[in-house]
Structure formats: C-alpha cells, structure tokens
Amino acid sequence: MAVLALENLTYSYPDESKPALDQINLSIQEGEFVLIVGGSGSGKSSLVRAMTGLIPDFYGGRIRGSVKLDSEELTGMGKARVIQKVGMVFQDPESQLVMTNVEQELAFGMENLGLSAELMKRRIMEVSSALSLQPFLHNDISSLSGGLKQKVVLASILAMQPDILILDEPTSQLDPVAGEEILTIIRRLNEENGLTVILIEQRLERCFHLADRILFMEQGRIVHDSINRQEAVRWAAVHNNPFIPPVARLFAKTGAAEIPMTVKEGRKLLKTSSLSREQGLIKETSEGDDPPAKRSEILLDVEKLWFSYNGGTEVLKNINLTIHPADFLAIMGENAAGKTTLLKNLQGLLRPSRGKIKLADQDMNNFPVEALAGTIGYLAQNPNDYLFQPTVQDEIVFTRHNLGLKNCSRVDELLEKLALTSHAETNPRDLSTGERQRVALASILAAEPKLILLDEPTRGLDYEMKACLGKLLQKLQQEGQAIIVVTHDMEFAAEYAPEIILMSQGQIISRGSKSEMLSRSTFYSSQVSKLFHNIDDRIVTFQEGEKALQKYQRNRRDDVCGDH
Image (tube, rainbow, N blue to C red; front, side, top):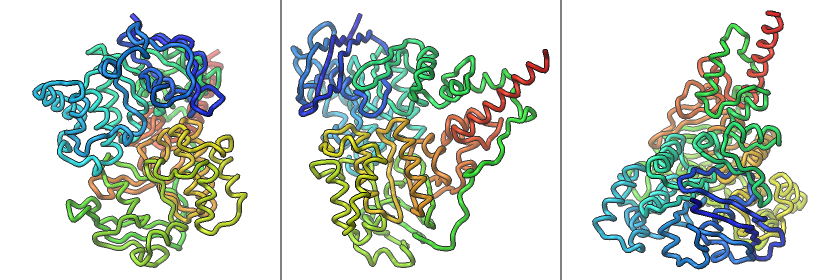
C-alpha cells in the first residue's frame, strides 16, 4: 500500500517563474528506504517539503496536483495528524531547535502530542542512549557543536515515533563514526520496525548501499527511478551522472564488467582477480602526494594555546601550530573535538585563555576582530549568519566596499567561479542550503584574505560543486593564500587537501601528508584508500585509484592475450 502518493505535482516558489517541482508522479510504499540524489537546486528539498505540507503552507508559491498521505489529501489533514505520521529532519539543525536544554528539546515534540510523562521519560532514555546523547542531556543547546545539534534534532523526531521519517542530509555535520552510527540506526528502524525512510544525502558512500530504491533528480524532475542499485549505477555511468559512490563510480568509469556498491564488494572483486603487487599496480609517485616544502615565512604561529569557555573545562589544550603562506590543511576529528573553537581562536573571535597566536610575528591580542577581517577570512558552519543583503551580488559588493576594495571585476569573477552568476539578483535567503553556502563563501573570498578558515564548507554541496570548491581552493593556494578547512568529508579532504591534522579532545593528535594520514586508517580514510588497503596504501585519491585500476585492467588484458 502507498503511504505517500504525489500526482502531477508542479510547484513554483513565490516570485519564481521556473518550477522547483515539475510534473512529479511518485508512489512510496510502506517500509521502503528511498534515497533521493541530485545536484544542488535539483528539487530534492522541495520534494520532501511537499511531502510534509510545508509546501505550500509555509513557503507559499503556486502549486498544482496532489499529495496524499495514506490515501488522504494532505491539505485536508490537520497539522497534528501529519506530525504524528511524518517526521522530518532538515538540513539546518538551527532552524529546528526550539528549547534551550537538550532534554527539554527531546521532550518538546512529545509534549505537543500529549504523551504521558512516564512514556516521554522512557523514549528520551531510548533515543539519547541510541544516539550517544546521554552525557549532554542537561547541556544548553547553544553550547553544542553543529554535529551534536544535528543528533539532537534527529533524536527529537525519533522520540515521536513517526510512521515516515524524512531526512535532508542528516549526517552533513557528523564525523565518520557518528555518521555511520546514525545511518545504521535508521537502517535498523527501517528493517526491524518497518519505518518508511526517505533520505536526501550528498555523501553517498555512507548510504547508497542501504537504499531499496534510488531516485535521481534534475531541474525539478525525477529523471530516473530504480529499485536495483546495479542498474542505477549503470544508468548514472551512461548518462554521466556523478551521483553514485566513489567506489562504484571508479569501477564504472574504468569499464568494469561488475560494479561494486561497497568497499567490501570492491575488494572482493580485486582479490578474486588475483590482484597483487607483483602485477605492477603500485602507482608511480605523482606530484601533490606530499605537502609542498615549507617556506621560511610564517603567516600564523600558535604557541601553547589553551582555551575554555567562561573558565570551565579546557576545550583546547596546549595547541602548537605553524601556518605558512600557501598551506592547505584539513582538520578532522570527532564531534566536539575542539575544531571549530580552534578556528574561532585563529580568527580572533575568541581569545586564548593561555598561550599566544602571532600573525606575521605580531600578537593577535593587540588587534580588534574588525582589523583582522581583511587578512583572515572565516566561514562558519551556518551560512545564514553571513546573509543580510537583498541580492547575492550585493553580499559580495558589501564586503569589498567595507574594506575599501574598488576592483568590481572581482565580484563578477567570484560569481562565475562559484556558479552564482544566474543568481546574482536573487535574494540569497531564497536559495538552497548549498547555494547559500556558496554565497557566504563568496562574501569571504571577496576580501582576498591571506588566510582562509572554512568550517564544514562542503555541507549541502553536491559532487560537482565540491569539485568546483576544491579546485578553487587549490587555485587560491597556488596564488599564495593559506587555507584551513575543518571537515568531516573524507572524500573532499582526500582529493584536495595536501595535509591533514587530526584532533581529539581538544588536542592535535597528529599532522602529516594525506597519503600518510588517510591510509591504514579504519574510519578516517577515503573509500578509494579503503579499497586499496594492503594492496597499495599510497593510493588515496579518486584519480590515483582510477590510474591504478586502469593499469591493472591493461595487465589483465595483456595476460589474457598472452594465454591465447
């Protein structure tokens, strides 16, 4: 039986002539695990908003067609009934948090459903235990990291036990371990409780193999609907669609007869094909494997940095870090490891409790934050904090005018580089999360800072936009700008960051080249690196994996020809 049915659904946002959803016909059965993939602005978020009634009730606009929940028109159902049946986790956790305290937040939805105090306590215990939130139950929401806020929102929805769970990038701010835990829990609820799951996710390596059904979206339409993952991958390969996991994309791109969905399946294919070092798979050393030689000039020097909020527990402990011009570092680690707090100290928003930060050999404590804006650019996790002008172009122009920078051609250049030209006259708050992220980044880059600090910049970005961002950052690095990226996106870090820093419990655990740091690792490793683990541990990036697989396939073809 169809729990959700969309018939001839067409929708346009207010003041938009182009429809965000165009003639959608979709029927979702009870207990299905549906994965929706597609580029930024393809209509994924609009589709799930329509499934919950947020479109058009909250967003306004023009709508035709129908959405039915359990065969009943959604428009005719009361909000309370819809909420009992459909729970949704949005891209931005901040927009969904209501209470000041974690335990109160978990109880808020259940209170509105009129559940008893005893039942609420039991459900809070269950969801907080499942999502490892018990140590934070009495914490203020404002004190949590972005990843923990994301887990709190998910827990609050699960506590209401909806029949249908809709998730819009629920792991975008979670570390690899937490991300896997969340998706495992969701999969278990789907398999063991019959929960219908509709998931939007950009990090497909985490979830592609979990889905029963995969929907590909482009320009507001469902262009492909598949219940077979192999068939979905082959369709994507034929149509040059990038929205498949790295391992599947790697085998598809090299013309393999069988395409694996997971690292396990990929390694099995390699092993059964007698892949070994003797076959000459080991790659030649390529440029960019190791970080560039350090220059004598020091841009930023951190000496014995300690930091605590309001004199409480130390969040940063004895941090020593040297940044040179043209450094490109990715900082990784578990949620609440101190990564964001470190960036805020480096930017001057927070000041060390002990220790020093020197900018070009000058103590940063001697400079107010506004004096550092032209030298150090900082993009926080929430792009909405940067958006206050009426148009996208005005956001970039404001930064340059505020700093006395007159070259207007730089504005057009940034719009083009970040694929924002078509949105130049659009109000940035009307854009998707990924598009808003790019606008906020453009406003930071407009200042032409010497050091660029980015906190989860790939959040909400599809594969194509991640590639554009990575190449842009590499170009800025070549021009001499230093870049520090805090990210949980292993694939992005592996492809673009020459150096990796690992943090845990407020300390820098290790720093080294990506070949060194992302190989021989269980969790902090790219899919390609895991695929070639103990076969060639120097292979980390997609391009390296592609070259190695092509070389192996050539060797295999030569062997077959030799046998004949």
